Image (cartoon, rainbow, N blue to C red):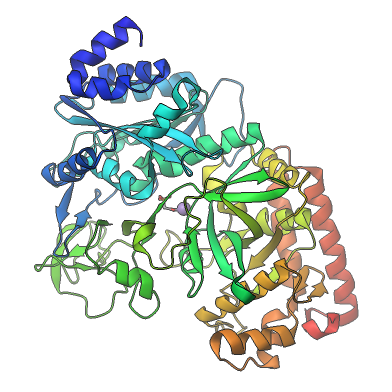
Length: 626
Ligand code: SPV
Ligand code: MN
């Protein structure tokens, strides 16, 4: 450590804190910490070296600071975000770029010099009177080719505590990597707090991502998606880094699907919000590796995936004992767990939208004192919990955790799944013809319909390629090309599938039960080993009726009728053609440098659809292709 940084840090951190830091041989780390200690100017500093006492210090601080409060169940706490700070702030989340760099119209960018100036002004002395928590974490398993060390500076004990549940501790990893560490740097301040200990100056809420320095600044916000540096903030840095190094960062779950004779085949899955991502990761009798973010790398000719995280920041709305027995149990078992923005009752229980039982008539929630019928300033009724209210826990608390979670090699991927909320186009499950066809017609063509739980009108299709649109830090065209190139030198290429849990008939009734998805995953598992055949249609390969009939019986003890099969797997030509038009339009008008092959593959698909239409009409029963 250079003498100046050393003197300064000793003075500000105290001997104990300084000694913890000095064990890590990395001058860049010391300089970075010194810079932001001086700039943010906290009253106190705590360096967490990941000992049980240090971790407890942060957990206790969240209570002492009143950022969290205890609930009746031992170990459970409640945290509130500001009433207007309940989701990711897309408008103020900005990728900083030097003059002349253009990432295309779908990515929010700002002039690097100007934004750095602005954020440093906002963050000047922002921690005055507060305690700064310094924590070390590791994205991906430790001691692995996937590992990325991250330093988090935050004045929120809630953020530092949440990260402890969600990420692998990294103090030892920083020591191990020493000067080699290519670490990410996070500076967060909740800013001034109001009497409810929620961020007060939301007008100065900013999330600025500096790719050049691998640094993210987050100010005047507490909501996890804006503050938990290792989640969506690091994700943007990792997408950028991976694009240079030949690996991928995807907004994907990772799960083990259990096949015949104790075989486990791993799948990854990308789904935009409210499309069944968590319920897929939590599927009965399967095992979860991760529910949100995956790194994919090539290893010995195969794709390997890791869960970047080790915990879950899950949506609590709708969780009930019948549909989500494992999460329900975890939410009712003593142990470390944070719930946010739900209702706290007088008995210090928690209640949320869609929970079993009656909604309590009153309590305390994200709006303060709450009673049934309470309205916000616009006259809209305030629900018992916020639709984006969450729970935070370690995956270790889930019964269905897969044993490979911390495997430094990750898991070999047999299949990748893309799914959206789609009432009328995609069949329930379909395999692509090959990797390129899958990346283009499934991943890069992903759309999802809005629901009543999102802002704006319901039922509007939103383009969201790979469900990664919000997090891209490289141009969309380049991102697609990197995905296409990824499979080039593989010996065993994962199959690519689409799923659609939301298909409806003309009368607006869902064509599938929630539990049917269990069968689709068993079918995909068999396909990954070539244990069942498939039928080629113009848009991809679909299951044969006999195979599904057998699986429905085995998995759900259900008699699956041929009539249901024909309705569900009918090729919908007009809708499929309309989708091609929409996707083409996006890539022609909103994306720079779309790889030409994307248009070619879409045009080939159109040709196949038109030929089939000529022969069989608009709506084609799957048996016509058998
Ligand atoms: C998502 O919105 O995709 C989430 C929650 O996983 S957040 O942390 O807000 O990104
Ligand atoms: Mn997510």
